[in-house]
Length: 300
Image (cartoon, rainbow, N blue to C red; front, side, top):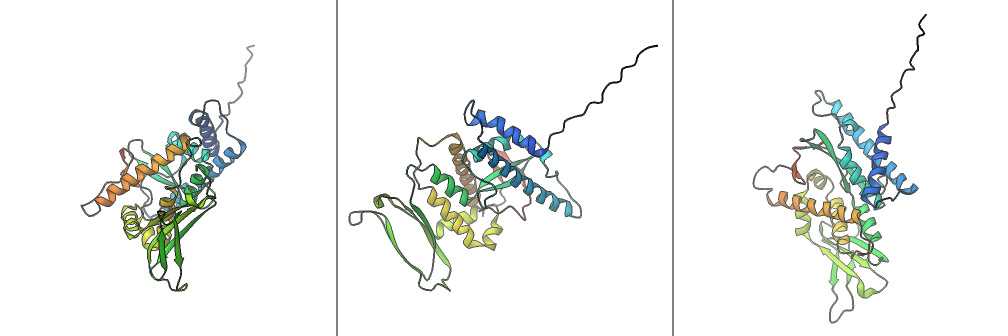
């Protein structure tokens, strides 16, 4: 009588979205940040926080897509995310020490990539994140950075370094604290141990209007213009904080290059705003559409 051998059923190991994301980030880390380097326990924690932020964003957008009477478009799920790009961008944010669970550090914004039929996630760095990593990579740590919007009833006098003044300074007085009027400008003041190194950065209506005209999410300017003006002020001030060549690394250069590219694209959009329809461009690729044009994640 022939002996029959029963084969044990195989159990496929299905990795969770969190495991897939974490594994890709860990693998990418050593190749991007440095050969043979391993992520620290804290960096792995930052990667987990970034996953939670992205996961919550995708679930919120997909739920809204499905709530429509006739849902269209590609499902906004992990299965349809351009994971290789996300892993690289995630490594840069983790390497800079950005924590996606801290308000205004990182904002995941999905764009549909028509060529890949997947979503590219733009891990946009918010104004709190910009302030954090720029201070971290500064040539000299500032003792304080002051950001102030100037309203039409305020009295503001910039004092620039020169023959009569040893350092940048200013005079600022709020004359009507409960009814200051409209915002007419703003200033950032970077302070060092040696006051002679202090830097005063001023920004006026022209710069604010340019940022507003270039914004992809113009409804945020319409809904909360002052917050958007403050965000613009922080970004422009941090651009004036000198970076330390010995601290600058690939991740710093990558996010700075991304922001510079976004400004060029936004500038082109602003310049052509009154010349007819503009196709939104991300990098060298025409994306065709952005997820939820009527409600994007908070862009601060």
